[in-house]
Each structure stands twice: as structure tokens, then as C-alpha cells.
Amino acid sequence: MTTGDLDAQLRTAEESLYDEYGLSSREHRVSVPSLSTRVRVVEVDGDDTRPPIVLLHGISSVTALTVPLIPAFGGRRVLAVDFPGHGLSDAYTYPRGRVGPALAEVVAATVDALSGREVDLVAHSLGGQTALTFVLAHPGSVRRLVLLGAPGAAFEGVHPAAAMRLFAVPGVGRAILSLPTSLEAYAKNGEAMLGAHALDGYPLNITRVGWPASRRPGFAPSLASCFRGLLDRHGVRPGVAISPERLAAVTAPTLMLWGDQDVFLKPDAGRASIDAIADSRVVIVPNAGHAPWLNDLPAASREVAAFLDEPVHAAD
View (tube, rainbow, N blue to C red):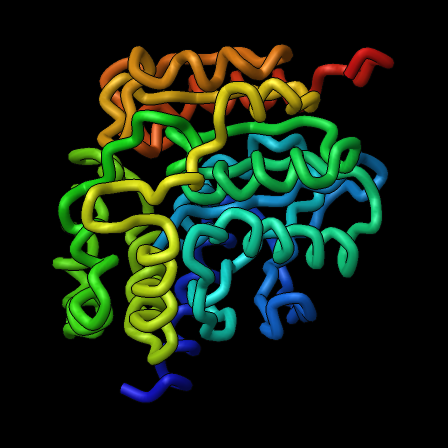
């Protein structure tokens, strides 16, 4: 299957997924000069009189996973970013130890090109790590922040899965990530990270978006470099986690939805990190994994909608 075929398959599944949730979209190409790359951003139509929402996905994933949550955003305009090497963005070699700062540059370029104003961030996993890095680098640019699941390697105490550490081994990771994978195997691998049965009851198009993205030629080398940038054979690279002292500088009001069975970091083990953010609240989702909104979409939607709709006060 050619890259063009894969791209067409991804777009067809994505368009159908947005249609299922009553959403219309268009795509943009955004240049990130500081990284010498371009990324794809999907814009979901909505009310542009309020701050837009920038939606950030996790490592090796796509924003399709969070489409079921978009109706909770109150009809706002949404900018869903494909990180470099993910989705339909260009391939990219991630710098070791500086994945978060590099991706924060992607967010900055997206905001500058398509918004030019204060935004809300809704971010999953590595997207959460990126969001926290962006907030610290651009104070005042973010009105509110929603973290979905443990934010990548941003919090101290994260234990990467053995497969992720293997992906970080030079040569080995790229070879494994390049192996042909069926749609069924891709879905099963995703459940191992997100939690068993996380996608039960959701449209199959969620998986049909991510699978062709994982077969594109730039995916394996980009993702292998991303894992190397975050991890070594012992675990998270020194300096990648954001210390509680640095997190204390986050001023944006922050909501964190955290599954009590998150495979990367459970709430009890990571509570000190989120508590370091003065204006933060945590909602523990029972019997939920790394994608807690998928386990309890009605509850997650209520929490996110209420948080995003709160009026902005001078103290915010």
C-alpha cells in the first residue's frame, strides 16, 4: 500500500468519525521553523468568539481518540495537532532529552499561525507533557489546561512499559515499529497502553484512523527517535520529568482526569506533582486506565464542560 493510499484511508476514516459526532473539519499545514518541519492541524469548526481549544494527543497516537470528548467543549473551535511523525505530519528526528521543548515549539507555531490569542489546552499523555512545557515557556498564553491521564514522562515516578524502553534502543526500536501490523493487532496493542476494553462501544473508525498513520514511512524512524529522546534502558531520561518546584510556576487553572488504573503512573504515586500546581483539581476516574475519558465518557464530559465553562477571573 502506497503512502497516498494510507493517507486517503486515514482521511476517510477521520472524516467519518467526525461525522458520527456531528462535527465538521478542515486541515492546515503549519510550518515550525525552529524545528525545520511542518505539522498537520485539523480545525474543527466552532464558536470563535471564545478562546480556541488546542487538542494534543499522546505518543504513537492520534487525536481520533479524543474526538468523543469534543462535544463537551461547548461548540468551541478546536485545533487538533498531529505531532511530528504522527498522523499526517512530516517525519522528524526528536532531540534526546528535549522532546517536550520541541513539541512546545509545535504548539507555539500552531497558536501563532491559527489563533494568535489565548487558548485552552486539552492534552493526553505526551500531549500533557507538551502542554505543561508550553505553559511554563509561555505564561499567560493559556487560559485553562486539561490533562487527560498521566502526562507522559512529565511527572516524577513514571514507569515506562518494557516495550517502550525497547523502542528506545537504537536500531531495535525502528525495526520493531516498522514491522507490518494488522488492524486487529494495532487495536490490541493500543488496549495494552490505554487499558483493557477502553475502546469497547466506540466507533471502529477511531482505530481506522490510527492504524494507517502507524504504517506511513515516516512513523517508525520518528517514533523511535521520540522514544530515545524520552527514555534510556533504565527508564525516563534524567531531566525529562518536570520537578514539583517547576510545576509550582504553572499559573493556568488545571483540571486532571486520572484513571485509578493508569498503567504509567497511578494517582497515589504521582499526586505530589499535580498538587504542586496551586490552581489544580484532580478527578479520579474509577476502574479507568490511561485514557480515562473513554472509560466513563459521560462523567468526563461533565467535568471537562464545567471546567472549561467557568468564567475567567482576574486571579486566573
